[in-house]
Length: 322
Image (cartoon, rainbow, N blue to C red):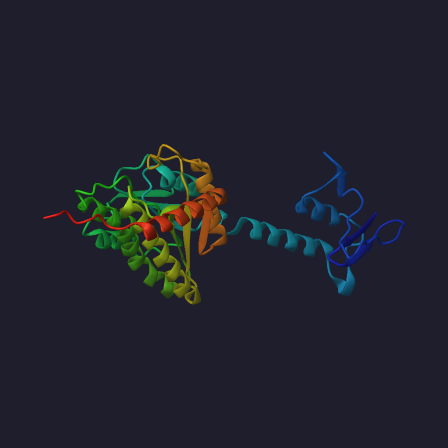
């Protein structure tokens, strides 16, 4: 058998080192037939087999068993990331249904401790979960949020609260409430958490925006505008907080199979599991912006371009004659 791993040759039996164009080659029982051609074993299986070789001493007295064990630990830690840490605490706001509810269940399954806040009771019953009934548009929201958290630190906050729907031109007051929930609730939450996270030098804020943040929607102006303000503010905040060790992520989704997806035409609609997969991706990779699905993003760009032309060409109604 001949193995060339990480540039160090280990020879067992007869033969010569095999190398093609500088690529790492692995020969012997570590490559087994499977499907079409050859299938490589997992890293853990390869490292385990390497530790069984009699030549455990490499150059300069390195120990192969210890090196393999440490490499395996680093690989597992790199793959799992913070999602598998049982000591982490997440605050999820707007989690009585939809993406917030499914994210709560997913994080509890991953070993997180979760505190949930929504305006209705939660169906979740778990030893690692605490729920509080609270509306983000209440006047005493900030004071009650501070009391709920107490001295406990928050590793990640996911703001899922949001409302939408068609606007009534005769009742602009309903649009004010949309801004209170979609935008101001997130700002009030950040006002409570950001100073604590900056002082600790760590933390992660996640807001669920929408790909509609770049559209001009005559039927839902408050929804599109509130999401546009949400995306713009928190992406700018993320750049400001990066030197302080605090991450901010703006998750821009398209249609998701929830009660808010009321449109007749819903192309590229995500299931709730797909949406929560995107939430997990954000928690793991901590990007400033993540847009999913990408096919929907291309369609939105086209619609946004048409909308800008409509705005450019539209003139106001003519004044009525006296």
